[in-house]
Image 1 (spheres, helix red, strand yellow):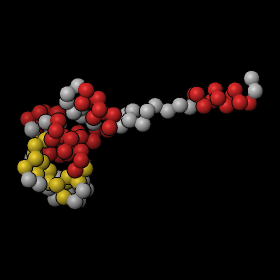
Image 2 (spheres, helix red, strand yellow; image 1 turned 180 degrees about the vertical axis):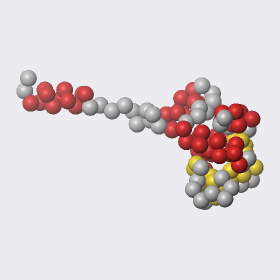
Image 3 (cartoon, one colour; image 1 turned 30 degrees about the horizontal axis):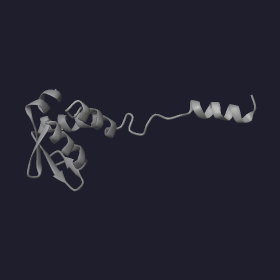
Image 4 (cartoon, helix red, strand yellow; image 1 turned 30 degrees about the vertical axis):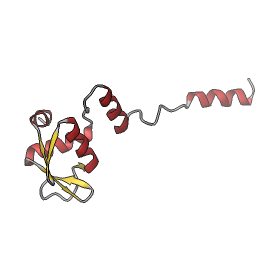
Length: 105
């Protein structure tokens, strides 16, 4: 085996999975196939905070718990949770649905 053959063998071993593998985009794509949005760890934090405080508030580029300076999640992620039925939006507020409250327990 010469140098070029061993280089090809190493290259084959280093192949990466598709970019969407293990990301939010991959999860949403999989969720779209199953006709629902699946939960990811970032969603659980926001749902727990929404359950404790009763609602989350949209400010700037994120969704915060009342009085909080750090966002619980991004606005885009909150919108995906609305589409999935975990949150409901009322103006600038996001409130957990019954399904969202049960998951956060």
